[in-house]
Image (cartoon, rainbow, N blue to C red; front, top):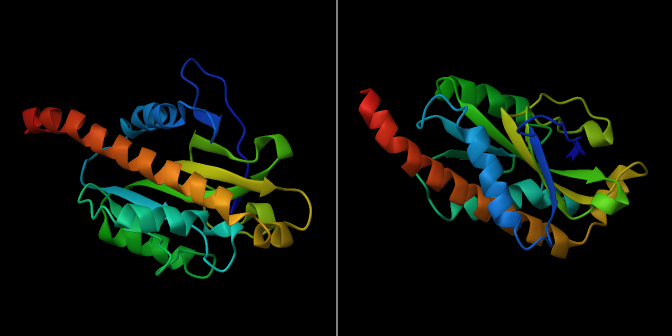
Length: 202
């Protein structure tokens, strides 16, 4: 679980923040992900790390996304973090060490829940740079990802552990469904766009 990210204004903004009720949310997320995925060096080393635990409703967003992505059995990415095998505070560093040992120059997409302002609850963010998992609950954990997606599941700033435990599962499920479908669609589209170019370079 990490804190809410701020939006950086550039010609092509480095982050997107959009309510889950927005009718065009999946298209917006896919577009933003495709922009970031062009930074990846190889089609073979795309890694998704879904951070969180199934022991807390609010912090289960990452494992729920991972479990949804695992159902597609896609060869287009390597996946870490599901409900059955979560990536959390205890094993995060070990997981990152394993990723860098097994995958040459990986492009990592981090997924996590976060807390934010009341007006932002229910928003999904796509941003450049790594996740800072644990920062929202004052834990120092290693950063995760070249880019990241977060779902703002509840209000931050006070009794964060209690807030996460009392987050509505309904919202977390909606956010995880949007994130997993958008991410899978973006990666699939990116792969088929990039494959002909990669073949020409051989």
